[in-house]
Image (tube, rainbow, N blue to C red; front, side, top):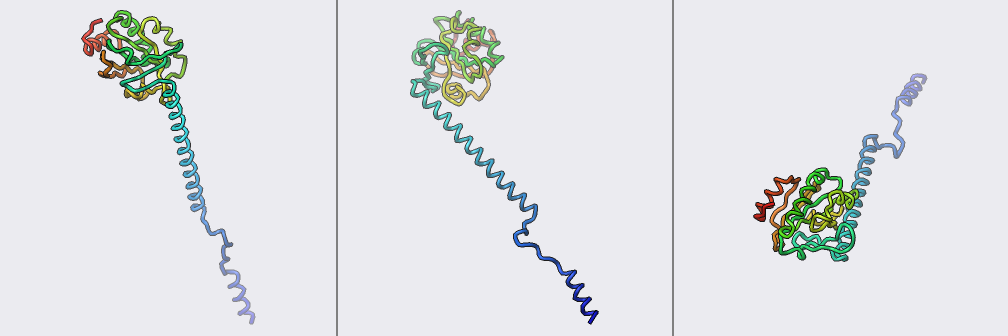
Length: 215
């Protein structure tokens, strides 16, 4: 009798205890579920950001269109950088047109703008040189004033549309770097574009090649 009771007690002590209901998930599976939730949250946040950016870009483009501006590379219409009014590519036909993009943060622009201003005065009546402020994050008008662009060039304009005031810049193939220069024929046809800076020699070569004009 004593031996049977001892075996029963030992069996009771060694019997495995059942895990409480609801606690069968391992720490690894818990981490996996948490990571999935975090991934979904990041995906939703990224999608919301893209929708917001699209809405802002659409709003800017719609506003530019309603104001009578256009960033078409073949028929652009842009406002003056300072003051009122606007200038169109069509209004400049009859002479070759050089469109040079700049921004106050662009050091290469600062290096080439004196050349453009100087050549604009020499070429007056033969070539129209238009400066366009794009991708601006600082004070574009103040920067342009340092080089007397309004006085010396045909026009100083402000790019519109896009996400950063760069609608025409993008239409001409711009991808974030400045300067960018576009060369149009006297009839308003785009001849080519150039990414990077000019000095007096390379600009003279470009004008001679595209227009047969010597500075």
